Length: 180
Image (cartoon, rainbow, N blue to C red; front, side, top):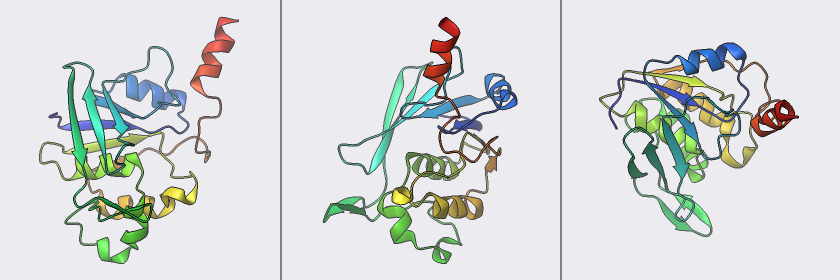
């Protein structure tokens, strides 16, 4: 999937201005897994879904072209219930500054996709909304955030309105309340 600019929307909180910016974004808009903050009518051009069967990659499906592609991180393998050998942000000179074994042991879908976009020659800029890396430490999300800050040179992170991992009210609650 070729795109020069990407808009990546995590599952965290979005402000009304964020939603407006995403809706009017000139490139493709990608959302993850169960799209926790998506409301009816929100843009969703590309869906990125973790491949839980092997947990070493993700699928990317373009809603406009019906094209789907599977991506696997290099060297992903399972040993003792843990996945090892991922290569996130390959070529980043700051990788040695991080405990990559912890980060790559169970990376988030977001980190895998951002790494893929960063390494793509086609992508020049990545706008990130709804990501604040406040989820549980099972993914070592705070370490991922530091890695992304140093290694994702194409990334522009738009701060979330709160530091909650999830939206203040899941989109499904808002739609239910509006229907009442």
